[in-house]
Length: 178
Image 1 (cartoon, rainbow, N blue to C red):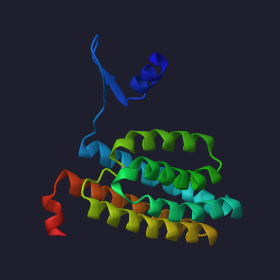
Image 2 (cartoon, rainbow, N blue to C red; image 1 turned 90 degrees about the horizontal axis):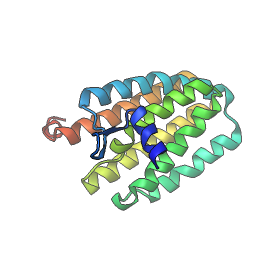
Image 3 (cartoon, rainbow, N blue to C red; image 1 turned 180 degrees about the vertical axis):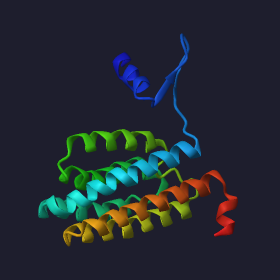
């Protein structure tokens, strides 16, 4: 347990107050934006690579996850949905077969874990899951067509929508302006 906590502290995911307690590190909106921009750059590259290297079995597995994610679109299933969403993206990321790219994306995803699907409003949460399913389906289709540039764009738009959702949660007045 100590080793695991020490690793989380070293990775910047947890902070430690001497002789007191451990705390999950909170990120500012600017830090979240920075992480998401890096994710667009790195994961976009991973999608381009995957478009040329992904197997039919990997594409089939991505398609299998789509209805499972929608089935877990209620707010009680957030952890299951997070795991399925990550598994979906990771199939394509790993298909690119770039060891350090995968490691960097792992770090970025780990930083964002507390913020993914953190919607409190049940209707907004369900809408987010439906939008994500459409994006995910488009991504699978682009990968299947071998269109890396389109896959990169779909991923960029998908992450941008995630950022807008986070901004709406952080500042509810944004929603009334849309």
